[in-house]
Image 1 (cartoon, rainbow, N blue to C red):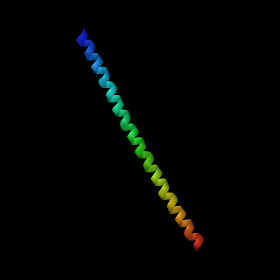
Image 2 (image 1 turned 120 degrees about the vertical axis):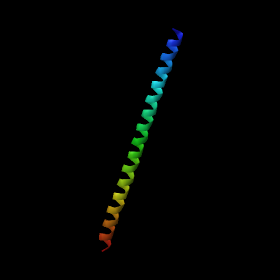
Image 3 (image 1 turned 45 degrees about the horizontal axis):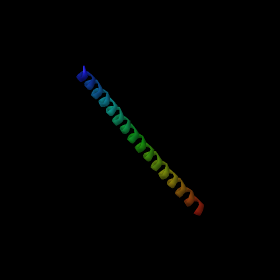
Image 4 (image 1 turned 60 degrees about the vertical axis):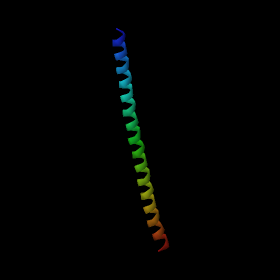
Length: 58
């Protein structure tokens, strides 16, 4: 009976570890997506600002 309990405990902690790893991957992807969105917005803002500046000086 004790060995069965030990196996169940090990199985439980293994599942917990898999869930944590999956959560970390999801968080990493989300952070990467936020960085990409931020840099894309910064580039678009810079281009629009450049175009407006050119029109202002012409």
